[in-house]
Image 1: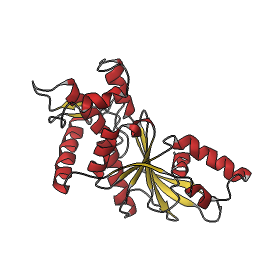
Image 2: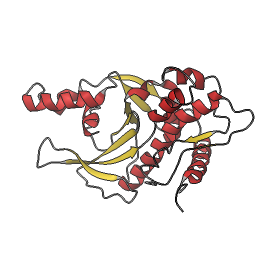
Image 3: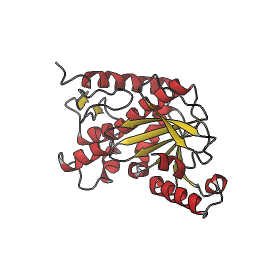
Length: 255
């Protein structure tokens, strides 16, 4: 995740990135401040190109995002290829009141509940596969929004945008919904494989291929920007319903 932050040229305090894979992994650059989390996040060294001037970050891990899409593909057989979920989810204008909490292995940050289990709530006779597919994509955004809100509370920072990468960042519906749930633009770079890119940058910096981080900044290019479309009230209502669904999933196997 540290390599992905560098691949996103996230060198400035306040820069946040989210890598969407089987799970989702978020980091917020807190600059020269080591922030001790009160929100069950990890406080970590982001990088130290000058060992006397370290840069710190907050980190949060979501266990299941892309893995929920894989489950719908392999076990539920909703589609044959993962990318087909976007077309299926676009068959409906909203989730129809359905919320999918993919706590297959418990919940990660900021809940850290090993006893939580997956739930799909709000099902009616009119619920279709498209509603469930859409709820799975929305769960990626909701879980990430929970982590980002915790990061803002811990750091006292307000996000200007969120840089995204990884396979699911190519899903325009999911990225638009991510922007709607956090209320700031979501920005996808031209090269979405930023973990490998960041590792290459680190090797290049060490070997002298790159002159420094300012040169690396010039290589970052925006591919797409997703701007929030919903109102603050709509966002609050969605998050409230999501948190009610999360509450139903928590502690399921305990006692």
